[in-house]
Length: 438
Ligand SMILES: NC(=O)c1ccc[n+]([C@@H]2O[C@H](COP(=O)([O-])OP(=O)(O)OC[C@H]3O[C@@H](n4cnc5c(N)ncnc54)[C@H](O)[C@@H]3O)[C@@H](O)[C@H]2O)c1
Image (cartoon, rainbow, N blue to C red; front, side):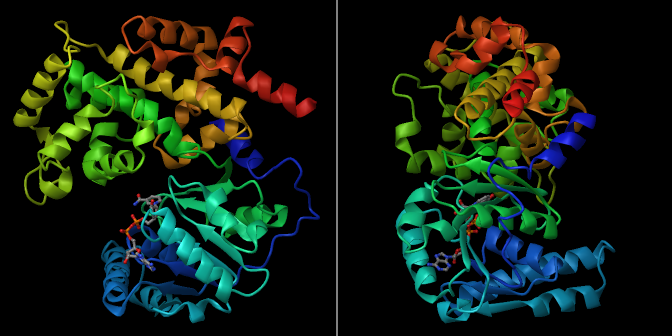
């Protein structure tokens, strides 16, 4: 916990950025797309008393988006968290629009339309045309290369990624994604904005998934493999929740929609390993049966109408088992909680080590802040990188070797940094301190 207090204080300390890099004023904001993310982002700004122009393709889409915002606020009133007057004040700060001309005066634009490069480049061309000089152009993309979005504009220094998590008005984490050309004062502005929105900003470089989702990929890959090997979703989630994760990852998939990940993988076929048929196969099987999670009443679990209680989904269990047998990975012996936790958490830590050696995250503490403030990692364990230091990097390295011997060896290849530190008896913390002193 103490580690996290220091880590959260250190996140905004970015080498090369000084007091001379003054944050720009953000007194108004424009949001493109009034869906899940855009609506939540607009609420986050209204909650911070910053006026928002919310744009969508047509009045019907806009009306839908505004109605969802109103419903979410009304729910807060019902729960006693807000008064009707608070809601009126916030709704008055959000102005709907279908014209980019309304963005001429805003200080910051946040694009939250569909995840499609062509579309985003078209939107940024429009923003570049209408926005005033010195305004900041940002995107909430989860997977796209923001360098390519910045390059389409005549002002790449003003372009940055602002990666909010869902629901954007609630989640504390804001990943601030710098491109190769983002201006230092734009980064400083993003950190100041995070504070204003009552969020914690963490800097990431551009890469697939940035810090948070990139480390989720191997973590969830193992969870999905484990169900093909014979663990039940309930066992996998119970083991992860026993470790302290806020929610097991398979329950998370059911909540977010099993289709979300399937679509991301479909859009990025180069990420599918050619020689591994188990890679995210479980979600694909559910998807192929139309079992998309809570919204369709069935996914990894079964749900009664109107309830979020996870019930055993026998049909899915049978199907996943037979798929495991077909792929030759089904096991005879029960799979223990220790193996579940080690496989998921060690592979996450290993990716974290790669993120550090590539300079995607500035410090191990930054990764810990991402994971404890945005991904439900238990605060009492300090975050994945701190936890790795606590149990010893040699333990993690030995774990990677143990699971490599069970199959899919390439997935267990240790990051160079992890191997070096483990072999010299060092820690991520000591490595970061050493670099800081240089
Ligand atoms: N849903 C998540 O959990 C999540 C989390 C982080 C980032 N993201 C990213 O945020 C973005 C939005 O995701 P979402 O889940 O809110 O999608 P969504 O489908 O809920 O909403 C997208 C909205 O954009 C609008 N839109 C589409 N084309 C447009 C255009 N040309 N101009 C203006 N508006 C347009 C749509 O009408 C819709 O209202 C995506 O890039 C996604 O990858 C999503």
